[in-house]
Image 1: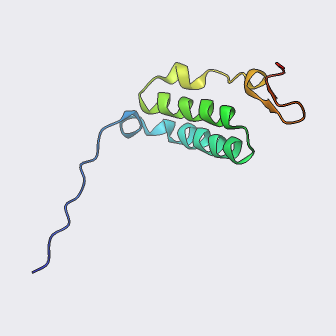
Image 2: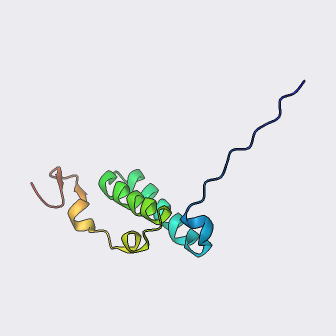
Image 3: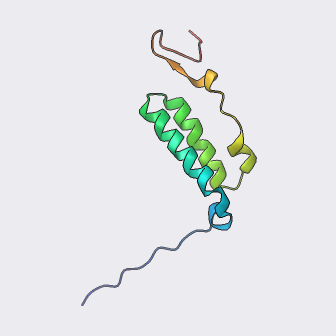
Length: 84
């Protein structure tokens, strides 16, 4: 006797109700992956947080510009955002 596969219940989130924001969501995830692969983990984390805000329906929070000058890691002197 084979067991039937149970399908997981899909939670409703903001993107299911507003598909026009899918592109922005995937762009934010792509940017987060880029920053993480570049060694800029703080920028990646901040960008990922923006994507999570969009999932929660907080459009204004997800569209805020990221202050990269504050979060950029400078490898030559080991500082974050120009602070030594």
